[in-house]
Length: 553
Image (cartoon, rainbow, N blue to C red; front, top):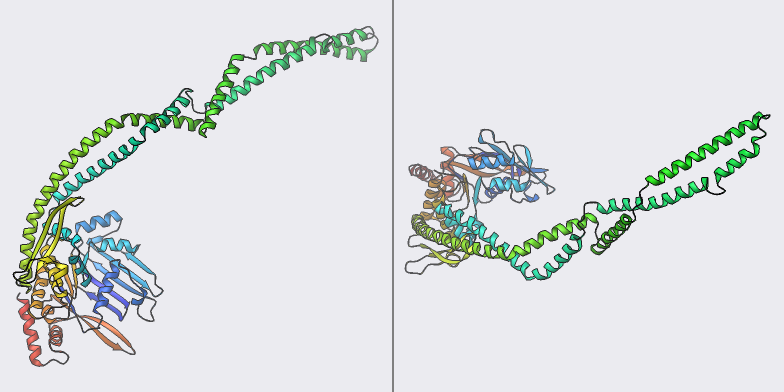
């Protein structure tokens, strides 16, 4: 529940600490005292959009902090999911609105997006203002209200699960049928790919490997020719070796008496031997260099085929392999599409039958809920001084949706003997407020949101009807924390906690103060509401009597 709210520099509220009780909290005050500002502050910590206009004139920022205690298991689970601590099942939510238009949100002093505040806030507080009456005017919301009253979502959840399966199956079936229309043309294209690429039986990076081998093979042929030419240059006719022998012969007879010439002769002899050895090794090397003409031709042909496909499909070798694999896989899918279409059609028909039967059960369940709903709400409306008003539920079957086959709209007959008609065409503002209160009353014990706020629920009512609204708010306050802003004494006397919003002039500025009233303060405030400023002793006595009388209800 909302335990306490702190407000600083929010419009005319300079600073206020507002404690709240666990039952019915009533706020009263003169018109213009700032009751709407309180609601704006609560809306701010719930992540609603705020404007810089609500910052007190001359101040840098407005600050609103709310303390929530006794958090439900559902809220704690959500906080755990978001990684937010909640020691002793408590959290503080803060919203700062800057005068320049920016804002900062925090949960337990940890910065949080306004959207996160909104998500958490929706689980903590339900605010009912005049605009919320529009829910009653929107027939699309009526089914949600009826289900909330029923309180058992078992059939709805089972139906939705089957409905989602049906949607998925129908979507897949539609995709396959659409694919089937172009299957023949697509199959031909895939067959061309499979034929073109499949014949080559490509390996990953094969083109690179073949290029290297092909270059090596071409170089082998050139190498052998070069070696043979080199050997011929050494050992052929008039080759280097013969020339060395001639040189040796020319100087051999003159080496005995010439040491230097002898040394050169020996070097020529060594060179001859070295050249002969080189020639021998070159011949041996030539024998070891492989030259396979057929392999060279094969490499050239295969590389040509691969490069042709690479150009045709504008991709590399890996791309060709992937294209082939994808084509094979898709081709198999196309071949199996007929059987899958048949299988999915049978599954769709089975699910359609199942979901239709579930929708009928859900319809029957809602039919029984609608009867109980009209009885309860009608009784609540009678209590709220709307005797003779009959609320009915127009419940019809329609097409299957995620919510079933049900079409629901609330109807109302304001006068005896008249046929019930749509609420939007009959109800006045005051009647809408009481109808909404009746609805919230019948679902109060089923709603998991711990705090309900009613902003001017008394609009358009007075007298006995206002008293009945106060009694009903008090009843709801026994199972939920209720916060209500009112200007009627009949409602104010029902408060478990009564807070006064009062405007005062401090120096040259207007300030709004919020005070928790004791018994005497309540008497004075109730008397003011009943009779205006400076109430008489008789009015004070009447106020005290009304408060005491209300406490016995």
